Length: 410
Image 1 (cartoon, helix red, strand yellow):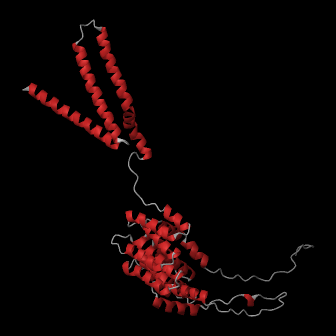
Image 2 (cartoon, rainbow, N blue to C red):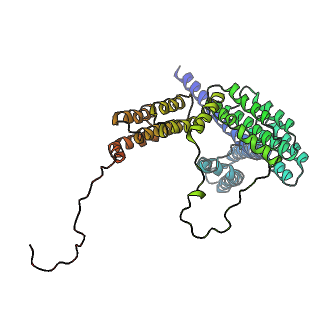
Image 3 (cartoon, rainbow, N blue to C red):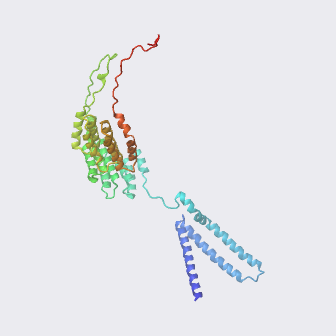
């Protein structure tokens, strides 16, 4: 029974060894640069080994005795020659197998590079003022990588800026933006770029507004929609600039004094400051139409605090800004610091300013803006003390002649 188990275990281990050897041979041939060459070398090796086994076996049979040195040397020599031939054949593969784990750490091994599109040909064609050939080159790459945003942007750029075909550029971007897995930031970037082209190339503010409104509709309540609303709020000023570029009106400059000479005052040359009350009224009307315009609301809060001395109204405006969803931490911290500045200059007490700065720490405890707020809290007393007016000290009347005096003291 023990003899049968020994034979069984020997058979199992032999099978495992043969299977392991076969797997290593298979992997070596598959990962090699020239598999057909290695298959030929493997077949040749098998032939050498089998032939050598038969030669040695027959040589041993024909040995005349222990004193047959010639036969023994022939057998030994044939084994050595076979080993030398096999080592020459397989040394490159063996050394690569032993060294490749170390070299793969630096050069990435035999892993194929990640496939990626190449747009160098399209860019070269575009620089040579061959937009149609550039479009063909881009589309060849997009056929392999249909959702590559770099290629889609390059194609739309060529269509809009080189071919002046805004309709084709918009179709290109819309096809990408309608994909269900399109990244939100890339979608917003595409429609924002489309709005810029409508303004720059076609001077069409209505189409630019439509492009930006797509961002608000697709990502409501997000940072992307807030940025788009900010752009829409300022399209009116851009439209005036575009119209002025096409319909230039003469500018009349009042005639100045012909002979200035020395003047007692330069007050008449200082431009008049904008009326804060008129600015506040304009900002209120503007915010009724564009409530998400953060720039206008921030300026209105400053006017409320500095001109009207109404810290409560300024705080309401800035609280609307800090309460908007998906605003970056840096922007929220900026508005809270601005409110703290207005409170310090407006005469608010220590607890009020401290509560404002603590909001930064509470909302963003692990960000750098919180550390800046903690530093400011540490020197808040000095900051408030610096805003207090130093009382005027009335000096007495002293003797005018305080030079050297002579004579005996009185």
